Structure formats: structure tokens, C-alpha cells
Length: 382
Ligand code: G3I
Image (tube, rainbow, N blue to C red; front, side, top):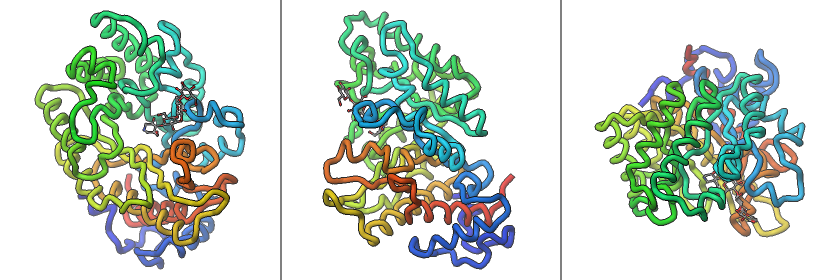
């Protein structure tokens, strides 16, 4: 527990929220905007509202599902979007631009331009970067998945990729998702669809962490997955693996939950306790891909009740992270519905982010803003 960030009573450190009750409903949250806008520091920006040292992040839209959409690559081309990325956030996660198929499209050929651009942008804007991702079963290039390689060749391919990509951004990446989605829901390893584990055995996961650490000793190295928000078979598997790595001296620094949530299901109420058990092992935790999708009939808009429910999920996810020592990185998987992956993957679902397609702030935005400001006011760190 980190009680300092969950103290309900404002300690008088800031006039910002001094008179605002702790459990303000999402519907009342615009008061936070008025208060924040009136406060020194100017217009409402999530990164400014956050406590010192607490990173509020977004995925940076590009590649992946955007390739087939009727708009140009978002990050380089949408100026309004780009301005908000710089203004609102203190951590950036390339949505697809550092994945294998994107950054290493042909054997021995790397395409660094778009990732370089994100890292440069982050540096100019005083932001950190979360690297995503090095060992995954998905979005691997055809040359890799369909190539005929011996085991030693495959091992070298992974090692060289990690050395090259992690090495290129040495000192510029705060956290790397080294191993992404390596377990199935039942807690067994993805031995079939993960080429690395299938061909080289589970020991390759340790190697990946070791190679990444050698390439950038300062970067924090994470396991990252979906469906691990709760204490369940999958998160138990990570809990065991973290301890195994620690016992063997494998450099693992963190465990992160993606948090692709849906209002179809209840909020994972044990999120905080689950993060806490990893913190108790001595590793950092993070929320890395938060969004909250909902069912809305085609051509309609979410109801106010749906928006409030969504805002409540965002607030609860943030609350869980704020309450756990070492959970200092909280990332939204995009902040505008304009570029969300959700409607592309889930028919009839959408509206999962904190801003509308035309960048209007939703109750979920205010819920996050309000809770951040409250945490900052109750615990001015640093
Ligand atoms: O690879 C196929 C290609 O063969 C086909 O021609 C083309 C036709 O649509 O689709 C290609 O797949 C696309 C894929 O990216 C690879 O580029 C999918 O349509 C597209 O939907 C997919 O989107 C990305 C997705 O990861 C892939 O898993 C999204 O942009 C990206 O937001 C999403 O991000 C992931 C995180 O990395 C990990 N956690 C889950 C999260 C959401 O799925």
C-alpha cells in the first residue's frame, strides 16, 4: 500500500481541490477542469495534474489497424492529435511502431524512422517512452514466421534483434515490454503460437530479459499481458515466473497489466490487490493499455449512464495503480475514439477512450483528471 497517495483528506497542499469531496461522481468532475484551469499552470493537462514521478501515458497511433483505415498515419500527419500527445501525456508507447513486423520487416532490414520520431518527440516534450515489444507471438513478419531456420539461427535472430532495437534506444526507454502475452488464460505457456517458445523452449524468455538488460542496463524490463488484472490462473503464472526469475538472477523489473476492459463485465475489483502482490515481490507494476469499450448500436451514441460507468472504470483503474507503491506508470491505449483499435476488432463495440473522435473530453477524461489532481494535492511528492 502507498497510503500517501490514497489519503482521502486533502492536506492543504494545493488550493486546487481543497474544497472538493473525495468521492466526486464522474458527472460532477468538470468542476476539476474549472479548478485546474484556474490554477497556475494554464489549461487542463493530465500530465500536469499527475503527482510528481507518476507517468500518465498514451499509445501513439500508427501502423497496425491504421494501415487499412481511410486516413493517413496518425502521429506524423494529424497535427491536432500530435499537439494533444505532447500536451496531455508524460509517457508514450509506440502502438505498433516498435513491433517486429513494423521495425524489422525484412531479415536484416530495420525500419527505425517512425519509432525514432516518437522517441525524439518524447525527448523534446519531456516524456518517457515505454518500448513495446520484443518477444511476442503476434505481429511478427512473414520472413520470420514462415522462414526455415535452425534453432541456433532463430536464437541469434532474436538476440540480434534485441541488441539492435534496445541498443538503438539505450538510455531513452524507461520501460520495455520484453515478453508480451506469453501465457494463455489457463496459465500455461503459449507453446504453440509463440515461435520463440515453440522452437526454442521456455528458457528463451530468460535470454530475452538478459539480452535486453545487457543492451540497456537502465531500462526497466517488464512482463506485459491482458487478462491479468485479477488474481487468476494467468496472473498466478506470472507471479510464479517472476519469483523463478528472481531466484535465478534474471533481470526482471516489472509486471504490467494491459487493462483492455469492457463495461460488459464488472470492473476487476481485485486489481489493486493483484498489483500489490507483485509489488510485495519487489517488482514495479504498471497499467499499460487501458481502455474501456462499450456496446453501442451502430449509428448511436453512448448514453450518459454508459459514459459514467466507463468513467468509473477509468477512475478505479487509476485508483488501484495510485494505491500501490511502484505503480508509477499508467498508460491509455490511445486517448481518442478517432484512432481506437476497438471498433476494428469488436463489432458493435467502441467509444473506449477518454476523448471523442473530435477530441472532446468525456466523463472518463474528467474522472482521470480529477483523481490525478486529487492525488497530487494530497501528496505533493518530490
Ligand atoms: O497482418 C494482417 C495482414 O496480413 C492483413 O492483410 C491486414 C488486413 O487488415 O491485417 C493485418 O493485421 C493487422 C495487424 O494490426 C498487423 O498490422 C490487423 O488488421 C490490425 O487490426 C492490427 O492492429 C493492432 C493490434 O495490436 C494487433 O494485435 C492494433 O493497431 C494495436 O492497437 C494492437 O495493440 C495490442 C497491443 O500491441 C498488445 N495488447 C493488445 C493490444 C490491442 O490488440
